[in-house]
Image (cartoon, rainbow, N blue to C red; front, side):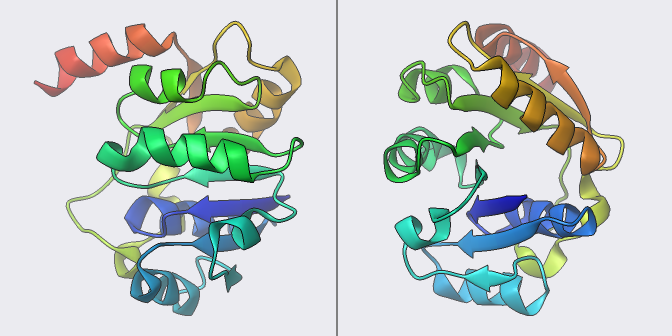
Length: 179
């Protein structure tokens, strides 16, 4: 599988390491070039591209791993910039706004791995971060079932336990457990 990781901080770089552990080829893009270079040096990505479009070229799966405040806009941009055969997901902790931004695209499936660390940045990334973690997937009625199965299998392959939930229910659940 060819994976594009958009945002190479702790979660994006850890995902890259986890994906490479199961044989994926990982291309990275980050607006912060220094962060992307650290991810490359750590082996979290096989290559870094200077533009989003180049990073998405040939990707079968694009994972948007940017801060939650930028997530909805970036997901929309990635959907517009990626090819029709590229499935798009994210790793944000809120889902409703992101799913709305995806405009009910059959190619988008929201995601939220419930894991992390107080550490930040790709220098603290580790392939095992997702091992045993719950990873919420938030398909909607328009979600392509085959894309969902592919993402479900990928999430399981990197060690997480995929759990399907409605985007609004996800946000209520996270609000209750986080506050």
